[in-house]
Image 1 (cartoon, rainbow, N blue to C red):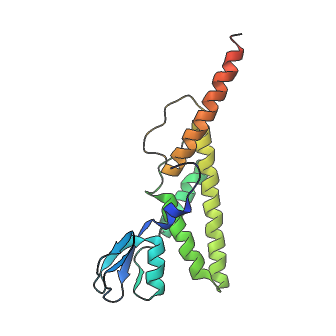
Image 2: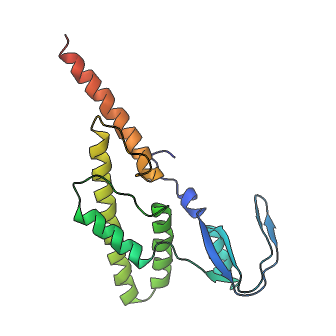
Image 3: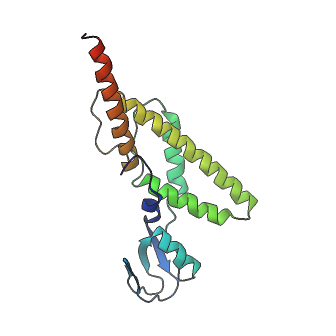
Length: 178
């Protein structure tokens, strides 16, 4: 993954659905969905899930991050903003994308839900700002990164920043040898 966030990757995040009725096998170029019996759970890319839900064939079985995951992640990031990064829930950014998209869709035309989604967006921005600060701090040190702590999106940012800082540090240190 590059530092550039590719929304296609997030739209292809697998999500769980529950079939509302027996659904026949669906085949299109590059995608095949097996036949699914009523009330059975199955996984499809997020963009496909939206089509199946809108068609009345399925409902979401999971909707990204739970409120508990949002709250605990936000608390951990705000509680220790200057410390090292802690592990986030698996596939945090992909699940956050799904959560935010589904919440926004559910909030359409509802002022109370719109206010809730605005708070969720603010919480997400605070988590992002905290994580960027932590990734930046560890990228500017000359210590080894603990494996498995960063999400793939953060790892890409870390590698890019570390490369820039290491090159800059090397060039500046050369000044003292001349």
